[in-house]
Each structure stands twice: as structure tokens, then as C-alpha cells.
Amino acid sequence: MAEIDLGALRRNVDAIRAELGPSGVGVLAVVKADAYGHGAVACARALERKVWGFAVSLVEEGVELRRSGIELPIVVLGCYYGQAHRDVVAYRLTPVVGDPADLGRFSRAADELAAARLGVHLKVDTGMSRLGVRPERLSEFIEELGRHPGVMLAGLCTHLAEADAEDPMPTREQLIRFEAVRAALVAAGLRVGVVHVANSAALVRFASARYDLVRPGLALYGVAPPHSPLRGLWPVMSLKTRVIALREVPAGTGVSYGGLYRTPGPARIATLPIGYADGYTRRMTGRAQVLLHGRRCPVVGAISMDMIMVDVTAVPEVTLGDEAVLLGAQGSERICIEEMAAWAGTIPWEVCSTISKRVPRIYTGSG
Image (cartoon, rainbow, N blue to C red; front, side):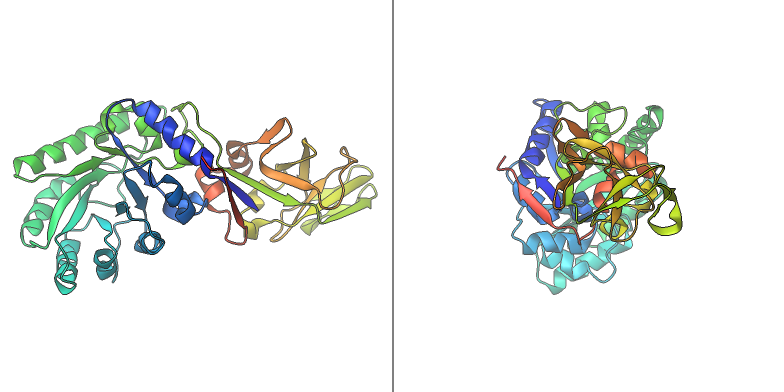
């Protein structure tokens, strides 16, 4: 099971606010990808009184929050709407627009639903080369906006490609381009609305990127990005399971698929019911460890779809049903998400967001 500490989540927002100081900057909490695997609805409910609003990637994610009773602004960052323009209007979502053609589609949807004028956020591509209006094509967006009175500019944003990199120059260059776009919009007589740029790394490293809102993602869940120490963060997710089988095997015994591992001597092997179908990736084969009775034990053999095997020879007190901690603390030992990411050759974002729906989420912490 995955234990989600909602009290820690709230304290992390407090830590972010402490970093921002008395600036009045709001927090647009990123809860896309099911809140990075933590559970979007539960996390949003826990944060409702602490943040300005929530950011998702997909329309469906925003609809889920609305249907669950979330009333704060919900900003859809993904810029792709397919046939879902009416859903955006009907569920009072705030779309981020990177294609001027979407302005007409949203305007028509608002007219069909007899809705109030829809506020959209313009996304500017300042260097990510993924989504958004390129600065040299800004005039096309302005002209298209003028053709559709059913929509209005309510926000302006961009996405920083290298805010967590050691070299700050690429981010500074993006911010210069962004400022030029903002000035051009003002010169054209437009009110840009709320401005948001900074992700978790940028809100710490680049004060000029904070603007009206910051968009923390992973920092909410207890991980500070590289080169951007953020004090006072608490881990939010722990991953636990229990021993379901124990066997004594002689030296030279193969363990798991392919015989990648053979016991160097007589060994005691524990089986745990978790595998790559649960998000415990096969890429950690040969490197992962788990905690049993507060001690580190190596995962041996190939990680399979539903199970892993652990050498518990050095911990003879292990018995059936004992709790095993794969992420989190047990006794004086802790396995942190950065360590798991290193075993998998990936980033912490991927580790928590790929914990699958098979794994029950248990929510704790009153905050």
C-alpha cells in the first residue's frame, strides 16, 4: 500500500510560502497525473484552504476535481482539448491556450452553453519548444482574440525548460523573452491577468519568475529539485507491503526469471507481493533494497510483474506477515525517493507518478 501523509502535504505548502516570504504570491498547486501518484482528489481537498487553485494537465483531470466538489480555480495546462471545449466551459475550467484556433472553439462553446465570457491563459513558448505561441507569432493570437468576444485573456504563462539545471543562463534568457511578450500584450491594450511561470525549482532560484502565482509540483510532495534546496519539506508518500512467503535455499540457487541471481551461499529468501505492474520498476533489478525490522535487505533476482524476492539471511527474525518498507522510514533507516530514482536511472517525478492504481492509497495526517 501507499501511505499518503496529508499533514506533510500541508506542511510542504507552508514551507513553500515561507520561501516566498510576505510577497503575496499565490500557489497554483500542480495535481496533474493524479497528484504525481498521490491521489488528486484527496490532495486537492487537503489543500483547498491553502492555495489559490489547482493545475492539471488534462480536461478529464479537471472534471474529476470539479465532480468531487473542488470549487477553486482549476487551470488546464496541457493545451490540448480535442472535442472537449464544451466540457471546459461546463465545468468552469480555465484553459491554457497555445493554439489561437482554440479561441474560436471556446467562444462557440460558451455561446452554445449560454455561459459567461470564458477566461483563458495564453501559453508562450519561450524555449521549451513543446507547446505555446511563439513570440514572433504573438500578433496572430492578438488578432484572433479580437475576433471572439466570448473569450478574454485572463492569464499569461510559460514553461521553464532548465530551471533545475546548474547553469542559470537558459532560464534567464527564457524570462527575458517572456517579459518581452508581456510588454507587447500591454502595449496592445490587453490586460494579461494572472501571470505564472515558476515551477518548484524556479520559485526558489529565480525570484523574478514568481510573478502572481507559482506552480510547485514535486516540492508539494516532499522533494526539492536539484540545485534548489527548499528547507522544511516532508516526504508525503511511503510504500509498504508484507512478507507473503519465506524459503530456505542452498548455495547456487537461482532466484526469479532468467537466473540473473544465484545465491552465493545458503540463503533465506522472502517474497513480497509487489512488482513492476505496481510501479516498482524492473529497472531497479540488482540495485533495489527494502527495509525489514529496520534493516536494509537487498532485492535479489529480476523484479517481476507481481512480486520481488528479498534476501533476508542477515535478518533471521523476519517472519510471515512482517511489514516491508520500500519507500519511507522504518526504525532509524529510511529509503528516500531520490535513492529509488537513482536505482532506476530516472527522476523522482517518475517514481511516485508511476505507482499504479493496483496499489491502495491510505491517507493519514490531519495537518
